[in-house]
Length: 442
Image (cartoon, rainbow, N blue to C red):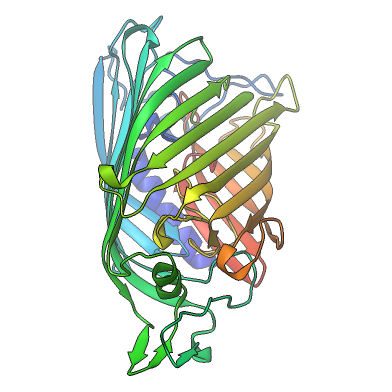
């Protein structure tokens, strides 16, 4: 594990040197504001030394990748390498852009990231996320587009460690194969197209409307077996059958109302401030949805500085909850761990480990600097907890909790927009994972 981590980190560092602060213009989440423009001044720390990054370390402060004159549009493309327990090693190509649509003094910098990735688990991803600010920040366009050709283990709904699959009527014998140990692999293709247009009401408040569609097709439930009148059941087949979904394909298409309150000093890596996001989504058959439904998303983040002289010394809190308000949502569209906007929650568990109709997640992180003079290195200590419902099996929200904790290393690669390489190791309940990504987890 240690050798793999060091090798992977070395590859990532080499790739990041080629784009430095440029890729750091990327997004943290689709509801976040764009990152600060390059004129954002790095803050000083306890020793009164300015924040430095790896470019300063290798080029002694003379960054050869910044143009001498600022441009209204910049684009960078680089090789990408990452690691996640659910996907194994990822590699591919990524690009980012920054765009100034208005005057710098009254218009936030627009930014976007796109990537094409292939993993050693034979998964293929194409994705784009963009935050576009129009002049004077009056209008704001958020986009999240994805095409996944995917395979991933699934589990029964709820946050227990036991197999909890409801019975399916119509079969003389409904069995669960004990050799699967609660893990049910699936193959599927997934298309997502999300867009939200918001209007600024105050400097901190935006309200907007959006359109969202998720299409899952070519779904193969690998361990499902039906022989005559005997069914070897799986969580996906049981849920889909009981709720009237075609287990081979389904669509969730709807419109949303959105509210955002944001006082963070930086959207990529906040040192202080609060972020609140509320999203109510209505999915309708007349919009192409397989069934009518409605969901509510609530999110809260807070960043509390612990030192007036060292802004990297802070406590960070993150809560989000996803709730099924009415109707039924397809199995793969139910909220699941690490299926937040940036797929970063639930360190200590594999992606998709806990899933359900009602989902609540909380995390606390202590962030601190390590290197005393350059502040290039930082560290984190974190803990999180997840609770999920399974309505079909009468498992309530807050009935079971799944905790995790861990530590991480942060390496500053873009001081102007505070972009870090994050390397984390988390331990959960009978689970653990190593996670490597750019930018903070939240």
